[in-house]
Amino acid sequence: VTEPWSFTIASEPACVGPLGEGVRGACLALGMTGDGAGEVELAVVEAVNNAIEHAYAGNGAGTVEVVLICRQQRLTVEVRDTGRPMPAGVLAEARAPDFDPTALATLPEGGMGLHIVKTLMETVSYERRDGCNVLHMERPLGP
Amino acid sequence: MNTAQQSASEVRILKIHNKRIDAAAAGEFRQKLGEVVEKGNTRFVLDLSDVELMDSTGLGALVAALKASSDAGRVVIAGAQGAVATLFKITRMDQVFRLYPTTVEAAAAFKRASGK
Image 1 (cartoon, rainbow over the protein chains, first blue to last red):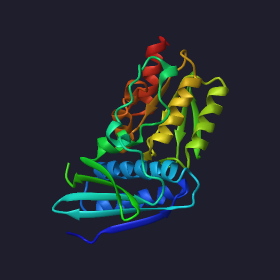
Image 2 (image 1 turned 135 degrees about the vertical axis):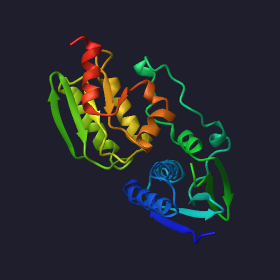
Image 3 (image 1 turned 90 degrees about the vertical axis):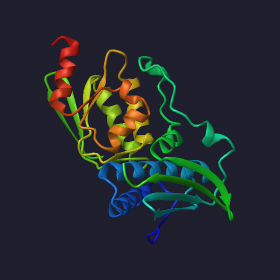
Image 4 (image 1 turned 180 degrees about the horizontal axis):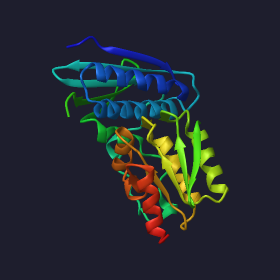
């Protein structure tokens, strides 16, 4: 078990970039490949975007904490916020966008974040813990 | 948003110099793409070789630009790598935007498709 990394940001989109770069750097330091670290960064960015947009309704008044823990060659990432909880069933129902690639007008411009998180991480769960909303994600360190 | 445009015959190449196209940059990215389309460049190659991370808000801006380019035009992607290429695949957007390793290959494919 390594010491956990913890990052806390204001719930502002401008804060997500430095957070993502910190997460990528931590993953590289743990021995992940560049592609693997980039995928974890993308999953975390999508999860944090979701908290900023939905838990805090974009008002910038809250904080989002990201914690990374490495244990037995597995990476655990938690994204924690104290905003409005995600409605039941939203995570379970998130799936790949369904569209006809040739029908331009039907192409989605959003609503893909949780599907991206679920695809890039091996396990994803959500719970309310000690007054926080916690999105818990895991994947192996290796490919 | 740091960009550069270069015209190879009739195909416009738009290179993004930013490392990230995320929620903080998506608005400016959408505006920049909109300006390119409004100038009549409905066919262009978007060079993402310098981009290390694009999230779903950046992708959404790109989809909006494609819709604005109309059926006659297409946007193709060059140089997407790592998590940027993965984003296109896992959202199935690689079926909408053709991805090529380089701008040369992307521009050549454009010309082949249009018979020029």
